Length: 280
Image (cartoon, rainbow, N blue to C red; front, top):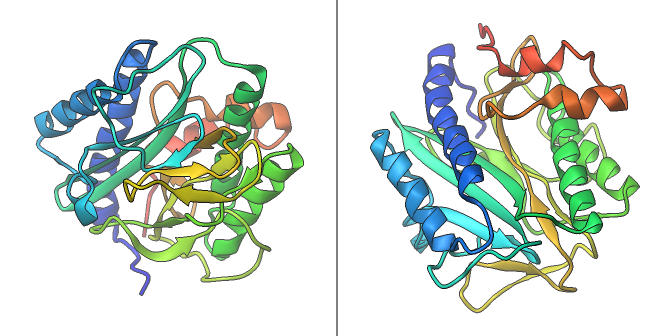
């Protein structure tokens, strides 16, 4: 069953998601060669707990950490470790979840570690662009599959591939709610989007082929062909005026990506996606 949130519930969700955005903004400052993924995890947990919230991932189906930190060919669910050090040229995906006032916030970013290769930079750019294009498809009356279609069309047009095994999802008082939000497929199918729905949209994109496998730790998913993988995620509410990005970060400039592609006026998306959208 798909649950549409009330204006009051959206406001409560906003607080949880702004915390997650703040954690990612803080972690960006800490990501550099020589830092361990375990250090990033401890820093994130301290921030979340200090804000009166609870890490959403830790203990979820037995997951042992606050963050998922996935490096290079790791797609998602990489387990942080004090022994795993970041290296110049890595790309590192950081997925954060927090529970505050009974609601879950969820967001992910893939960061470059120092200077990265041209191919890695292409992957990061295309994956982030695909997320923003997917968010443009979030509107009342649209279909869930419109979101995945926007991702797949952009990713494949740029020579990359979309992971099939993992998808986005509804989110609210639980981490994973209906509907599932695949990052591929034809438009015009699936549940109709309605005001008050909240979705975690999260393209997972590979430089090589789309196939993945899970390592013996039971969590870490990697590309089968060892190609690089990137992951970007925002939690987005469906609103009459357009998408409301609950996890928008202060250092993020949506129009800088969309306007050059002719997809938004330079003064349009930036304001609309960040504001406290009025919900009925």
